Structure formats: C-alpha cells, structure tokens
Length: 251
Image (cartoon, one colour):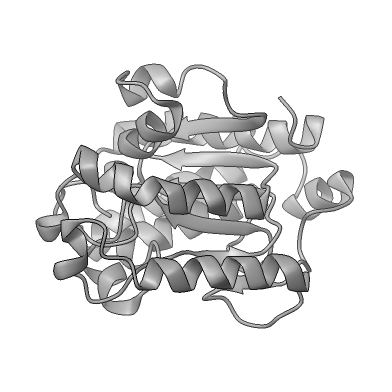
C-alpha cells in the first residue's frame, strides 16, 4: 500500500531506484555479492520452492498444505468491514521457507486488483531494494501485509481491522519460519512490535519478533516521495544483510 500517498510517476520511480544502483556502484554497497551471502548461509535460500501465489511446488508438502489451508481460510474471511469492499484477499507471495519475510501495511488498489502484494511502483522499488542485497520474492523471500484486504482509499487500517487480520499473519510467520523480518513502513513495524513509536526511532534500533530478528525501514512509497530517505533506507538494508550473512538469522 502507498501509505496514504498518490502513485508516483515514472520519473519519480526511476529517481528512487537510482539510489540502490548508485550504492552498488560505490563503496557504500555490498562487500559481497548476494550469491556469496546465500552460499555463506548454506541453507534456507533459493530452491525452497514458491508458496501461495508463486509458481511451482518444490516446498515441503506439510508446510505447503498448511499454508494453503491458511490461505483458504483467509480467502473466506469476513471478520471485519474490509471484506465488503475488497476485490481479492491478498494473502502473500514468495517461497515456503524464506530467508526474509517482508511485511507491509496492506494492499493498495493494484494489489487488490491483482491479488498480489507489492505490485506497481512501490513493488518495483521493493524488488530492486531486495535484489541489492541478494534477495528475491521468487527465490528466498516471502511478502505479506498486516491486513489482507484493501482499506478503502488506501487509508491506514483501523485497530479492529488489524486485530482481525493479525492471527493470519502470526500463523504465516510460524509456518514460514523466516530467518529475519523486514517491516516496510511505520504501520507494519508498530503492529508487529506492539508499539506507538515512530518509524525514525524504530529503524534506529535492533528488534526481535519472538526470536526472529526484525529490521524496520521506510515504506518504498515514502522513498518515492522523499529522496532524503533513500540513504537511511540503504543503511537498513545493509543491517538486514549483515544479520543474514553474519549470524544466520539469529540476532
């Protein structure tokens, strides 16, 4: 979701993408390619097979079946008012045993239309951000949201809507067992960490969700609106990379 912002034009998107590319071309970027990071981890990376809306079926059968069953329950959910206005339930997309679970706020208009998380301008930027540290929703990540249905007008989900949907996300986290969680934006970070602190303070510290390391960063739409956030967002990505490469997902 664009977190209450208009969809940027292509020039804004290209400008935002440039910070990732520039970082990779300078000394600020990775010390090692993403493929070497995955090799160092030794497991849990590519080849686990896509889950939910991704293609293929190489994941373990029990995990796949449990996730599919959870998705079916979410698809029939009418626990809050968002069910009455949605086109699709946007359950999630990615591999069954991911290195990283990316959590956003909720579906926007394009996500609601396609039934997939993080599409459109923000989704393209997120994919480039992940790729800059060797990650991909097709190979080693899973992407989900706090709420599975689009709030009208892309507004922030209400507390009761988040409360109704959080059991699905908590069960996704249990089944997926990611090495780390990346919260994209204030709403995702505040909800998972059960806090009212702002994103600027949250992203400056280390966190755990249970025993899973959690990194908070700006929502991609915020980077599209404000280019001054690109450099700190890059620092957040490097922190996530270091967690994965240095400790195998344990803080």
